Amino acid sequence: MEISAALATRKSIRAFSDRPVSVDIVKEILQLAARAPSGSNLQPWHVYGLMGQAREELIRRVKSKLAQLPRGESPEYHIHPPNLSDPYKSRYFRAAGLMYGAIGISRDDMAARQRHLAKNWEFYGAPVGLIFTIHRQMEPGQWADLGMYMQSAMLLARGYGLDTCAQEAWALWPKTLRECLSIPDHEMVVCGMALGHADTQAPVNGFASERVPFEEYATILDNIEPEN
Ligand SMILES: Cc1cc2nc3c(=O)[nH]c(=O)nc-3n(C[C@H](O)[C@H](O)[C@H](O)COP(=O)(O)O)c2cc1C
Image (cartoon, protein in one colour):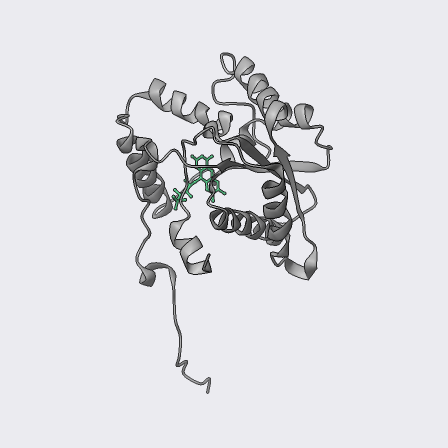
């Protein structure tokens, strides 16, 4: 698949079919993705691939805690800045509005929103779940490297006819993930990802996310006044 086609067709999928994905393909994606660049080639990513019973067990453990902790445990980092300002705040509301609109959940139906949030913790039905961690000593540059690894995996997945959804919602379960996957103390849970075949009929997959106009995020300079 052309890279531009992989980019153009990648979108966050939030309902998957139960069609299995072979472990060989999962390994291929996760191995090829490591060709992603990283500052000084630190390759600061770590990924846990969950399939079959391992995936089931993680989902079961989270589900058993949901009644007491409907919004998860305390994350180990701020998933969003504490006082998210505009234009980011508005984009956040707009994205949420589009998604909940696609599945007919109104803004004030908190119970339905909560049920939808909890679907994250079933990997939206995908047969493969990925959990990404990073060493605690790492700084923003290395978090960016991890993001490049994740995006590489998402684009490679398209080449295999697979879909994905990055899931920071998994960062809400650091304790449970640590226990269940035997994650060492020096690693921090950053993000999860669902990987599988999209359920093409599901309404939640039936909307397109927006992007702000080019001029809002890009500054092209071709003439700077020389300093006197
Ligand atoms: C790092 C990261 C974390 C995300 N976490 C979640 C998540 O927890 N749950 C979810 O449904 N979508 C999640 N998303 C998907 C974003 O909402 C989505 O990328 C954005 O709205 C743009 O839509 P698109 O991916 O379809 O282009 C995440 C995306 C990224 C890059």
